[in-house]
Length: 319
Ligand SMILES: Nc1ncnc2c1ncn2[C@@H]1O[C@H](COP(=O)(O)OP(=O)(O)OP(=O)(O)O)[C@@H](O)[C@H]1O
Ligand SMILES: [Mg+2]
Image 1 (cartoon, rainbow, N blue to C red):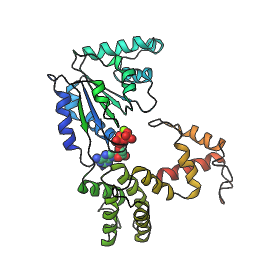
Image 2 (cartoon, protein in one colour):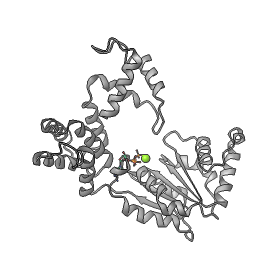
Image 3 (cartoon, rainbow, N blue to C red):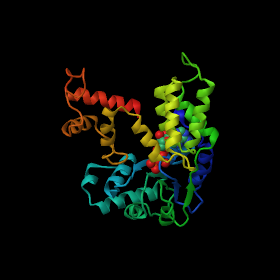
Image 4 (cartoon, rainbow, N blue to C red):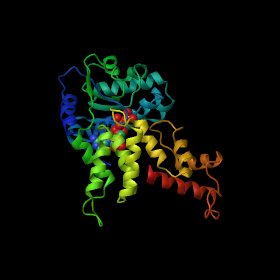
């Protein structure tokens, strides 16, 4: 994944010094922007930046997501900080917050809170993060700009921008077109033109570019197949704002063979950022009747588990 990252250097150059500044009153930095814009990607780059790793004594990362459970978040952070004991897991939630508060107050830590949805979630988490006399910093990502004023009156709001056309084009090529040194490499002028045209519809949105590029990569080097996708892109998504995410996902959905579509939709019932155990997913899909041992001709000899696993592998490849 890292090989495909484009841009972000400018963003890192702005944000890292703010996080490293010990004199500043700013305790919380927030990266904001719409879904799929690259907030988590940027936060990850910062989390691994050598300057950041060298400056902070301890680093911790917690996914918050739509269903914010403070106990889980605090435990995850304490665990990353390597101070979560078995006794803590039975401790009252208020005590857990106190333990984290006091550790963050005394030690120079960077805590990333990825994907906070609303100010109320911050309110429920803040007992652990409200220390003022500390060298620790909080970096959060959110689609909601309002959280920062809620979290820290001296906080820094960073509004992440879309990719420019050159960056979009670079990302698209990395995803959709095999590297130039791979065997059989050729990119026809017409294909290039088609690709460039489709990228414009993505309006600099990295996730849209990745999804579109992913679809086209499975069809490379067939110009006819690229033309079909391009017709879809153009006829369905004529609005001036470019493709919105829903449209690109629809494109991805439409491109799946019909027998894979229910399985793709089924995944959406799991919460965002939730690690889905494959065995459980397979069992659930069989129980729901989405796959069975007699799903397809030629699969007669396969048990439902094998069919379901095969479908999952195809989904992983196609989506
Ligand atoms: N600058 C970039 N270069 C290459 N790929 C990128 C870039 N920014 C984001 N991506 C890719 O786009 C996808 C979405 O990025 P990411 O998950 O960081 O978005 P997000 O803003 O955190 O979205 P959400 O609001 O849903 O949490 C990921 O697959 C990521 O790898
Ligand atoms: Mg994110």
